[in-house]
Image 1 (cartoon, rainbow, N blue to C red):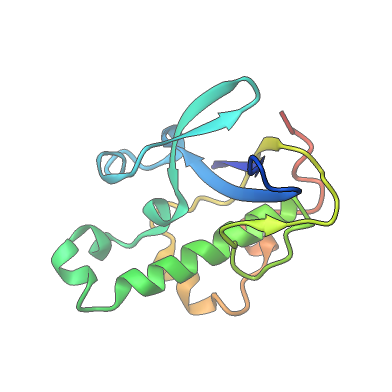
Image 2 (cartoon, rainbow, N blue to C red; image 1 turned 30 degrees about the vertical axis):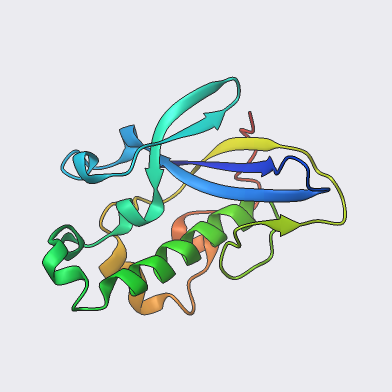
Length: 153
């Protein structure tokens, strides 16, 4: 599956960036698409309808909303999704070294805006597979390897 990874400069803030990893809707399992939050991801000069990693990796129980809150699933899903997102972003943009993706990141240099598509392992309903290993999860476990960002837009 492909993921769109981007680095966007925050206007008015010197060398402060926002990093995102979004999954194009075309990569999301058909039964999950109607429940996804749609976000327009910028890639090159175009936009691609996409969604958050949390919507893609969520277990089936997440879509049964009455079960999600009592089971504490929301907090765990957020942690797993943010960790996966950080691993993907760090593979493409090594200056982002945080364990979990921060809201913004101030950099000493000004690398500029960029976006690219990278191929990762299928993340549809991956929560049950990934969550138990979240503390030791590595980029290679997601099918990411050095140089995977060579298709930058």
